[in-house]
Amino acid sequence: MTQNFPLFKIKTYNTLSRTGLEKFPSGRFEIGPGVDRPDAILLRSHDLHDVVIPETVKAVGRAGTGVNNIPVAEYSKRGIPVFNAPGANANAVTELVIAGLLLAARNIPDAWHFTKNLEGDGDELETLVEQGKKRFSALSWPARPWESWGWAPSASKSAMLRPRSA
Image 1: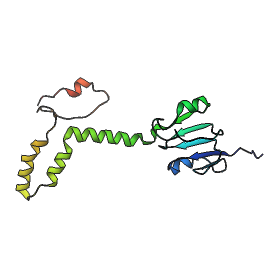
Image 2: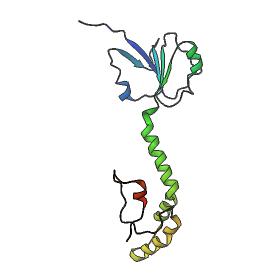
Image 3: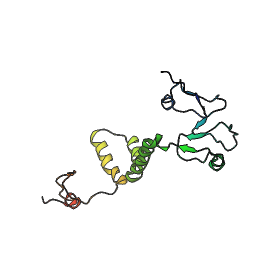
Image 4: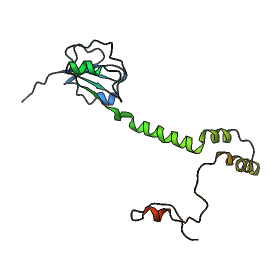
């Protein structure tokens, strides 16, 4: 038995991931920037505040965080829901935040510049490194006879942080 499904039309703004767009089967969806009388709109950062959208639009989807580029109140009055998918770049944002924390906490940019401009060989270079690295110190544990660092599922936090006797 063959079923005839309606062809849904989706107008796109901006460049969207081909991997994401391939989730829409071509026999069921017409997708692209030139789609007339769309059922839905997909976009990233395009500003829709001054765009007149057809009466055929039933939903708007934003690939990204926030909806400041979409007139949500106007669309809500027309019964058009607005969706967003903020998770697409969550890993990249996490990596940037962690990198920023490390850069700030360990004075990495200045240390990088210092090492890039070092000149010398052997013992001379080692002496320069030892003299210069004090400029780039960060918070550290006081000198104690720690035997090991690690995590064990059965260890308590206080036991893990308690120094062991030498």
